[in-house]
Length: 530
Image (tube, rainbow, N blue to C red; front, side, top):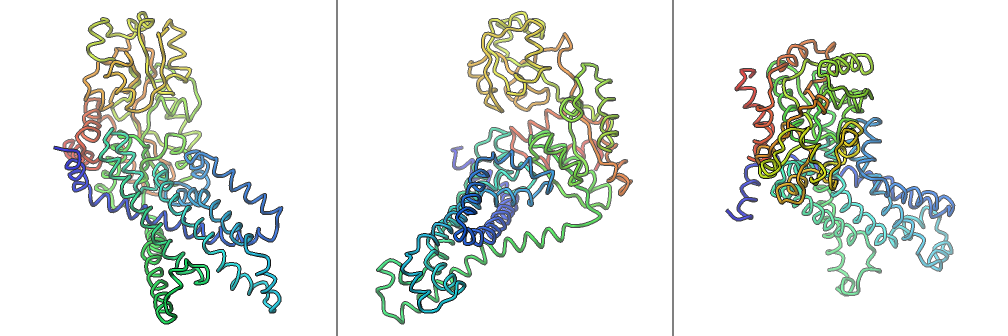
């Protein structure tokens, strides 16, 4: 099957999901563009009359452009929560600079003699603004708006990492699964949406631009035809703006109002396949065993963003791992004693975050080192003690976290490891480097789908080096008090999972291309939980 046929097959299979994500993307983009206009244009006009203020405002707008988008999301989540609000505010912040700056430049660049003439015939400052400055500045202003709109479409994809949905969700699924078709399924509609918005705003620009400053070819037709064409341009622009900006924005507001319910439980999940599968499992359990509605906030950018949302009350429950919570949330030293680490997490989350930690789900997402079978056979390495002893002849390619965290590579080096080279690699890149022979060993997780797909040799931790990473569910006490039935539902998954089951589910999503939801439902049915 050729690449185009494969892409079309994936698009056909996921068309319903893709349409839903496309609508979400339009809602966020339209809201951000319209609000940027409401804020940016008046602010740009105000600063034309105050040069010192202009320097401050444009300077601040320039500074906001330098803030990494994920960093800005991390700042916004504790303030406004997760979901579309955080994404829209982030996009507005990035979209303001072109609108403010172009409005300022457009108004300031008007010929002073025109302004004097307007004043000479007795126009007030408000009349000059409405009838002279704004009409003449339209090309500049609309240029800034068009830049902001196109930029907004791309920036909204980052909002998926705050549980906002949109086409960024599909792109992230593709990156997790190393599936270019899923990446394109998110990227191509985003590109088309950007082009469509630019076209619509181009229509608006032409409709608002005074005939006197339009190209000569536009103004050379007879007066009656020019008037008719101008009316048609206004009508077409109004219809296009209504369809592409106003309707999506209004539907977003209506949807947000409709979702505000006391009978809703919000399930969160981080931005990797296993977390999304577990999020779907709990979501389906709650929906099928209670009368509660579930709001899914998946694809959150890591534990810190998830915990910020959890503490703010914008998510009620999520899954994580004992080792991650101990080190990154409770800030305690990691032990290799599984029972001790679990108790630390259970007691620490209850005391510091007023949360209930479930019993271990049964699976563990432990750190492991992995080799190809060929390298393992050639070196005779199957255990971590052997790997450390032979590390001088091995090339390590690992994630940044593995190389920097004091309980991982630095600790291993203190125990005698001295790799011939250490390369920082991310995601599936490290697996590609391993199978292509560029590195000899990499860090992995015990339930990674790629471990199964590539038939890698996992190195046995015979020296109990790595801390435990038992999968657990964490739920706000406030949610349990409000909905007591949740406790029974959540506890029904205690001890049900195992590593083989979790790896197989990851494999079905990342390699076989199934959705996390259908994999979750199948698992629950097999366990007689649905």
